Length: 450
Image (tube, rainbow, N blue to C red; front, side, top):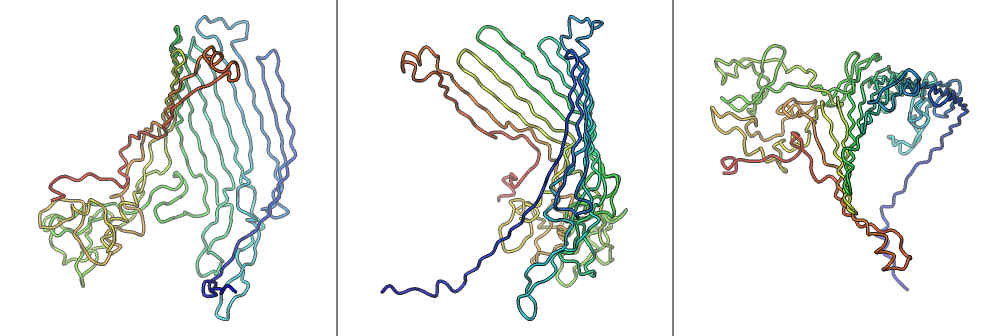
């Protein structure tokens, strides 16, 4: 008889979860077109979702669009513009991704002093309403020779934003948050697109398609400011801006890190037994005898791109073809937490720039002196730090494809009609990225390495 090794079955765990959601919708649409130049469409829908309380489960949303093909009018006479259309639309949409049974309370297994049991896991909020997006768009389409242009202005008002809003620890709310309609915000901007058949001559053709979107985000209403580890959201500003401490460099006299505190600069004294914020006097930078106030926090940059887009180019020469797609984005900032984490000066991996740490009086550097103890005030780990805030602009060659289509006559001869079409291609994705964002990589000079 085979002997069983019961020791290998000492720690057996199992777990999982199950959730079921309900959604139904009733909708209708009316479309109208007169001679292809007057266009209209209207919709209405009524949606129901189980995640909200019964009295708030249903929402009715309206939408409509109109278009006018001006180039089909008798008065329109242009040899330059072959097609010209203006259009506008409005639509209301309800957000269904608000969390499973977001409005309901419930229980879950918990561990207590007396052992396992059942505890309250979520606070109910019967007043939770639909989160809705009201989208308005106006634009035009125009063809000039081989070039087609589209331009759109859009505005999206989002009302009844649903978020797990934080609550005071003293209230004893499970998870210290509750799902609420916390406010509203607006996304607005301009979209531009240009498509052109640049060259179409003999066996060679080149098509290009370029688009760019300019975006502005603003929080219109908020029950209270929301603060995360690195960002803050409040009325009148974009959502989730970087929020934290303004870095003022390293004190060349003693290697202490320095930060902005109101209208002043303070240094954090990295001396065992004398840790703390000290005043910084440019006339006497090495003096740490005067106590200083803690650094103050401020907005350090917008995390949402202000512009983004793409550019696609397609080439064809005989049976050869190629495609290059480029993507770009910018106007935002990134908190490089990876680098800050690697500069913690603990007994672990360090970033290469640690070799440029302060070592002697008068040395100008942006890395403080070594301090054993991983003191969080060195890099202000509780919030964003402008020392590690970088621009997020980039241009990326996202996709390159080169192909060759075998002539049909050659396939017919070789396979007697069994294969009618064949194409070979090679593809590479994300081969090049051009950006000022440093990521984890930082070059070193020979003096730093030595």
